[in-house]
Image (cartoon, rainbow over all chains, first blue to last red; front, top):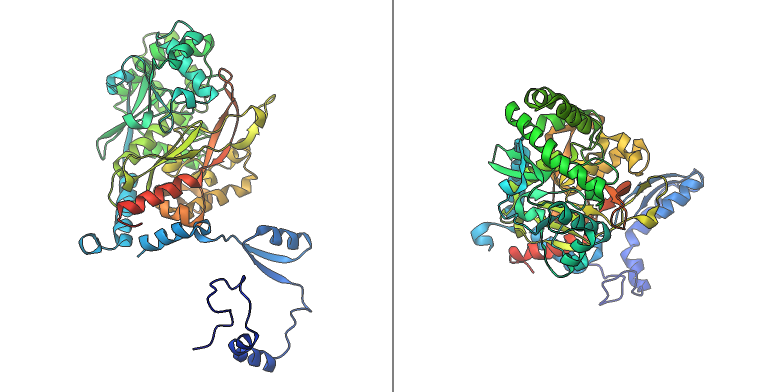
Amino acid sequence: MKRSPFASGSQNPIACSIDREAWVEHNKSSMETTHHTEPNNLLAAPPRVVNVGLELFAVNLVSQGAEVVHVQWRPPAGGISHLIGLLEKLRS
Amino acid sequence: MQGSRGSPLKLTEEANQEALRRILTGEPILIDVVPAAQVIPDLADHVILHAGPPISWEEMCGPMRGAVTGIAVFEGWAKDLDDAANKAIVGSFAFHPNHHFGAVGPMTGLTTRSQPLIVVENSAFGNRAYCTINEGLGKVMRFGGNDAEVLNRLRWIREVLGPALGRALRELGGVPLKPLIARGLTMGDEMHQRNVACSSLFLRQLAPALARTSKSKDELVACLEFIGRNDQFFLNIAMATGKALTDPARDLEGCSVVTAMSRNGTDFGIRVSGTGDRWFTAPVEMPVGIYFPGFSERDANPDMGDSAIVETIGLGAFAMAAAPAVIAYVGAGRAAEAAAFTRSMAEIVVGSNPAWVIPALDFAGVPTGIDLRLVVETGLAPTINTGIAHREPGIGQVGAGIVKAPLACFEQALVAFAETMDIE
């Protein structure tokens, strides 16, 4: 089993610090794959964006002429852990 | 628990399908118009039924208080509005929600013993629901109006229109409402803020019987004129239809379908089938909409009325796609955006109604059976089309708009619903 690149004990990948060695190990296969593929033209072509969550980002990109598909998304039950737990149990 | 009743998911899915079946297979028929005390015996003197969840005089908003003082004078329980207010302060009136007596009422929604009530019978289940007769637009009691013009109109409704409608309906043998509403949906009505088609279709069906049973030509002309110039006449009939269709879906074990949404101008309340007749309330929100000339949002009262019962059965804002004209009236955007409201509400319901379809959505049925779990999970609050009352008593309607049901009601209800399933 791969060692988590995130500091042990943390459940929040944004708030925790990253173990650099573990991160390299965790992503080794994908980094190698990227190394051997042809360079893509992501930066040469006009951007095409799928925006998830905050609509303001999509609105700003559209105002600059970008092609954007906005996905309305918000955390289930407003992110309230007690309600999320109840919903999970009610769906069991 | 799982050993005796199956998993929570299975129990709720089966119960919700049963609730949906009961709502969809109901057969609402407008059978009569009678004095309220005749069908609600608990309506004694000084008893006032109101819209929304329970509320005291002290908690009531301006238009609700205005309507209470007006109806007390109308019923002869007070000599004038000041006398009525003083009597209310000292507790001379007993206040109860319409929903506790099989009734509903728009905006302030007051029901008292001598007012004539529309009687809608659900012939598939044998239950009945009641609503007062729509008074028209502008300065009317449901929006807090209470002057002599308002009270005289109510007297005419009690003494002339109500009995005339009752005679005509009895002579007709009733008016089936399911096909009438189906046709109205294809003609641009959503049955909350637009009832132009259904009011016309109803009058077309009723007029011959009204003529045959009328006591005089003058009475006939007055009744036809009153109904004919009121585009919202059918609203109260649609509301009684909603109550008649949802009542058989109440009290189903494990059922997370919402059976009532209602507001009293102070609080918004919901009831859920699996939690019985308990109300879950939160402060009601302000409508967002368009105001009549001379008024603005500074004049507006928070949302009011039992009329959200029509959204509970898939009409109103849930059927916005059927009524692109109404979206301009309630100030909710462009006509092209009407379908988005219906599609959005389809994400929080158990199913759709094949008897009530929307041509603009390739004849998809209206979204029906609000599932408490889906509302909480998605954070999509039910949208309601609504009228806007002036915040001061005695003025009346000042606009129309849309309002969201507060999510807090649904969050409280989910906790209580889970408790009924032994889940904490």
